[in-house]
Image (tube, rainbow, N blue to C red):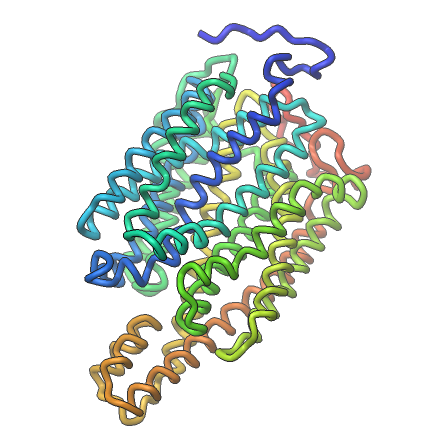
Length: 540
């Protein structure tokens, strides 16, 4: 059983031993976080390789979808229970357990020889990730004094975005020199190193009250989140009004309603639904969802554009996405300073406005567009995301008592996953619709070949290579232009949504962070400034 740490006033309520190594602890936790996020983003550039029957696994379009989505489905579904288990039994233990599961599953993924085996391994990686991600942020909250948490969370948020950007780059480098399984095998030495360093440096912490677990709430939350993510994932393929999608959405709604009703009557709920009455918690979750909608949707579209339209290799495509990662690393740690000077609202409004301009630039892309357009758009989008993520995350976790840091962190992570899944699904649907419209009239192309081409850009370019001479070249041009038009529509919709977010969220989100960072808040009937103390946040 963990003994109570001896505190000292000079360390602002944090154990002196932990306080003096808090920045090293942050480095370990951020590296663990990047490992998880890279697990989500690294497969985007590997899609053509995995589909190749010689170099990869010969995965079908459905196989590829589930190789990517199985990870996110399990990850999102288990986040809340995993965060609650970390609070109850120890966050360091949850981190270590997650790393072990993630590492073993990554090793298994690197050795499989069929798409179904890879789907199973990726699902198990999602289990490990669900324990790692909330543990990283909750340990940060208990390792830093209140006045430094904003900066620590900002650094954490920057690395969360960095993982999304370096995933395609690391996969590109590995695919350039090694077999496809190397994109998973590379996780093993990293995980082993993290286990050793975390065992030495990361402190133990848990809910001091030792509240009992909430198994019924956990099961209901898993059903609701898995059904929700499944319906979002399947919507573009099966159709948003198909029985399987509508059934999953209704199951998510029913389980979510049951979860809320059950949690409201418990003395110690896993997640108190009344937290959403707190303006910072409510608008923080909306902001993070909107931000990751933008980021994951952008990477999904841009990676394909760079490879299929402009002909870059996976490595070259990954390198050309680095400007967004650079902006996330540079600007995220500065976000608390901007908030202290200008307030949360102006910072969030500016971040979404910059994202809107970046998406508008992306919407102008054509097959012959110079890379400079992509570069400027990535800089704007990366800077915008870097401004929004830190204050939004701090509003979420700052509305939850410190004893429930794992669950608060899990809520922050769930909103990321839901937002990312929505971004890929919605923008992917717009892209697919625009792509198919662009190939309605394929004069001279045999109907079987035309049907294959309409399935997607990879299939279209593949079938074009099988047609003779000028006919194949013309079909390839049609496919590329149809795909580019589809991405333009998707990026244009993203620009509109980011503009709406700048206005709607920027005018409703609290202007002050928990702990007093920012200008004095404007009085509001439903506003609560809850701090990350050990006392429960009282909803309005």
